Image: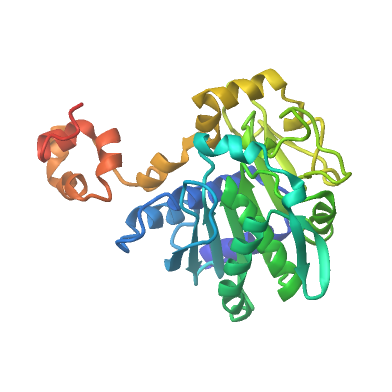
Length: 356
């Protein structure tokens, strides 16, 4: 028990102060996967399995799950708020993925439609108005929660479009609430602000990481000029925040050692994912390859992985396992993943609807 408490204390310290860690980032992706699980029925079993896989024996509790508005994509934008009184940690996970049908609109956004981002009486740059509004709604809800947990650390996590909402909300918390125990991890985050705001991130949120999977096309939207490839300029243009973490293994795996830690002073580092060829980006844009890559991080397809409890819902696909799997097979929350991973068991035990 003493060793367990010491390990938790060391984690809390390293979680906030350390440089980028592959292991920590991989833990964060479990929270993203959990956000793809059903929440309307208040059965958080698969989601909780994901939380526990990242941080075992955490006594994780779902404080709230609610939709964020506006959400200008077909996917639903949702904020999950979960806490652990063991780890003294609250995690804010923002879910909202840009699908293939949303890509064309996202790619062609015009920065002239962006608005000033103002905290107090000071403008820190220009942002997408919808992301600004959704972030403001999230901040108004969570600010009292953060102020009431002085000895906690706070993690902001987001994927795709929701990564933008997560990062802007984290910056708002940092500037308005002066919270020091804060970290930020996003995956496949698109551009949504200008160079001026990227400097605000750089000066105030040094442990905010923007993870990019190989030639994931969404981080290159909206496009700079007329191409996906290449870096945006710092002159009245879209501009990413630092620090990009680029996983560039040719076989598309995201294993420890595959990552490149990009510039801490340039959000549009030309030697990282901006170096991918225009041909490859166009291939991703025109085919399902782009959407598939965008939905796959750390070697897991996020939605399927979440439904499986991040691989923690046990399954032995044999008929002798029927007695222990009958509940999972018949439960509508588990059915999709059971049909995919435990097809034989479900067919033998229940209504044979997984046979095809």
